[in-house]
View (tube, helix red, strand yellow):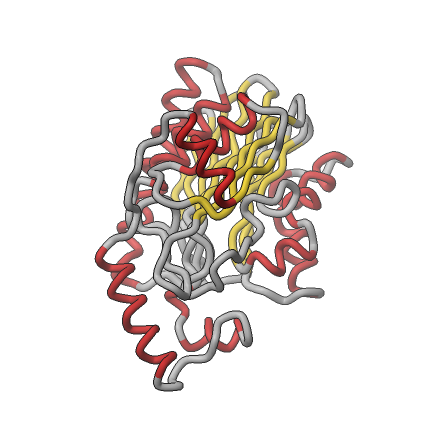
Length: 307
């Protein structure tokens, strides 16, 4: 049994970006599945799918990641292998092209799980990661617009009243990319993000936290997206995997954890899942979330329930 699912971030995607988002997740799923079909390696397939999304400036990860309050990019990523519970993650990394590759290096080349900030960057350079500026002109322009609104009092600080800000500027939420892949029972999950637009420098969301943004076991895997603070509080991805551990299918597990979010932290959230039977699931409480999956020759692309 081989299958793969990717997401491009929950939120409210502007209409003019829907087609680009759909094409982006389709391409990422195809990239990952093609490698999965040929090699049977779900780790490499997951990494390649996430890299495809990181390299696409439509998404908030890698190239095109959103800017912090002081105009920089701080990126997070993680990856986990279900059969061994091996995991690697990085937080607050700057000036590299593909954070998911660095997270994989942490998993495979160190005894640690999470490296952050300056230490993660020293590790990146030691591993041969070259300098790369991920800031696009579009992200810089949006940052300048928000900075002007903030300075004139037209925009509230995003960490003070996040939900109110998102309602006023829904385009800010679209972000975080992820993948879950399965091959012959081995499940791997990976996630990458630029975080939340205009976030406080040094802020760490759910993506690099194993159990929150990413989790995988021999029973299932999950990758989350949305407001990280809420996802962290309910340990969303591990909660989904715990449901799959007791026999709940991937689609039902995804729905169950979104129900938990809706009844508790009430933040914008989405998740993708795969269980060890090869069932593929996803759910979200936001207007849109671009998703694509391929399984046994079946291909599916989705972005909005009311498209």
